[in-house]
Image (cartoon, rainbow, N blue to C red; front, side, top):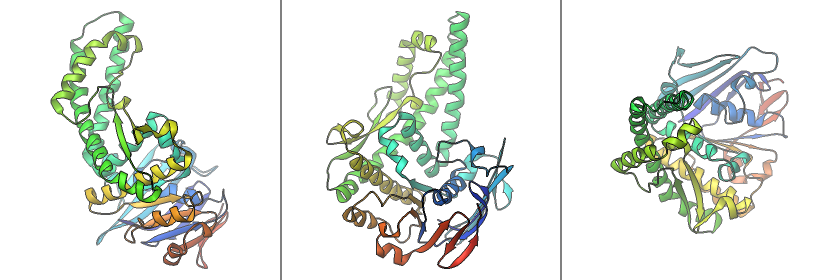
Length: 377
């Protein structure tokens, strides 16, 4: 799949912008703060309906404006779809070919992206919620059913937490309704574990070899850390362990007023030769591990969707030496639409630049090889 045309209205620093994009490599070059990353963010939002930054939707709206619009033409084989995200101060609307799409899961299935930016170092060093979010985003793009299971799980989780609080507040121990909620949340958890463990397994079949090629280090794997003590997917074992643990920890959960086991509390680790990279790896090693993960994701997406995702790379080459750049470039298949930002074109190998459409970004315009597109700050 490719994005061939992008239109922005009132998005971040762009009041009005229209771009035609190369189906291969696109490079946006400019100083920091001129809006290069905003282009990548807009494509991410077009695909997933939400930002990959730590902002509210309304904060993406240009100052003093009431709404924003992101529109893109997406090609998949011979099919062309126009996707659109409109965000107002207090609502969001999604459209495909001009028809409003009510369900998030029906919108995101047509267009997938994988992004990498310097802040993605937080995938290793940050909180478990960052890593869970990564799993959820990847799996939601790969399998539409996962979104449904996750949404249902979160709805039941909210009900269970509220009921635990009421039980504790009112001092009663009627567990009949709680048992119903337990069975429901376990049923959804089983499916989430099934998808997550399968995805981790697929990553681990690719990750060690990719990481070795780009870093010359061996032994990188992902370890899924869960709250119920399972190593492999086994439906009966998961059901048995969750039921048993819910009984054992009931008093603790009543005091907490929260569900303390399940997929919403799980995590995963980057393990290099039996050592957790979060605690012992250098920032450079962590960066390469995350790049290796993103490359593995590309091939999993291709296997599952029969198409490559669009790859968004925000200034990743400046921190790498020439040898590592060359090793990573080998994975940039010409069939993968890749959109790159940089402050210095010399950070990107000449062989990539020669194949690319290059855009110069300034605060009041974006120029593509001398051809100007409107875009003012």
